[in-house]
Image 1: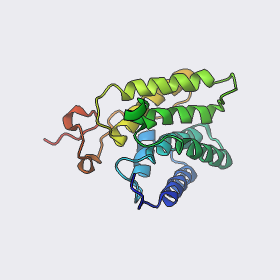
Image 2: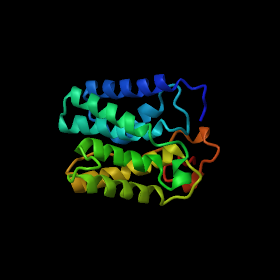
Image 3: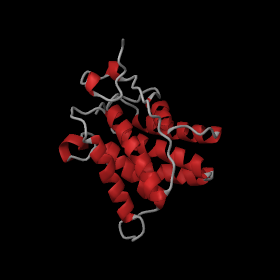
Amino acid sequence: MDMTINRPKIYDDITKKCLEIFDDGQSLAVDEILMQLMDLPGVPMHDPFHHYIMPAASLVAAAIETKADRAALEGWLREALRRGKTVPGGFCGDCGSCGSGVGAGIFLSVYTGAKPMKREFWDVANRGTGYALTKVGSYPGPRCCKRVLFLATQALSEFAEENLGLKLKVNDDIRCHYYKNNKECLGKECPFFIVRG
């Protein structure tokens, strides 16, 4: 992890951008929100920021879709940030639980109000995390924070609609524009790689 990065500022910028997107009120696909957050100045190619970006983008989309108020979204984002910061970098390879899949679980637990000692939605949050991790694990390493966010988002969209009746839009044709910055890019093996004629 690069210690020269102004981490508090970038986390703050991510939250501000989420609220700006919400205030605009335009219904965007989650992958479009993800890219706006990942395109913010200072967000690295690979970094634990993505462990917050995943639930944050999904919470914005859910808030717009369900017409939640701004105060609710602010509370959700605060909690998602707190939880996302607990997932360390390299968790994907070191523990077999990619932060994007865990981020899907953070979204589900924050959105539904699931808690460790609460009966309701505890199962949903855990099954959703597993569903996202299974999708993430359908491609080989090495790590790519962008690829796994897109995969986890696709899985979360399917899972949320089936289990919560929540429609989180995701585009069918996600195209990654980050590959130039990723020396470990899978290239044509990645489902989001832009194939040039």
